[in-house]
Length: 82
Image (tube, rainbow, N blue to C red):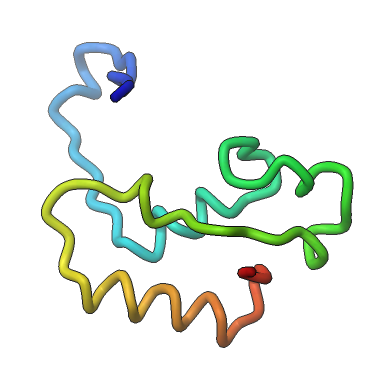
């Protein structure tokens, strides 16, 4: 399994920014993120199809937060899932 460590300057290392599951999912679904959909750049964003972003979310995550986030993304019609 691959991973990465973000590079930061020392003065910023003390700052920790908390993100929600919904924030992470929205970032993964941005059209500039090629890891999620290879057709998002060539098609209109509303026509791109997504299989899953769930295998990217790791760690101690409450399953209800994941479900609620997916539901909010679906209700807002941000993307189309297969």
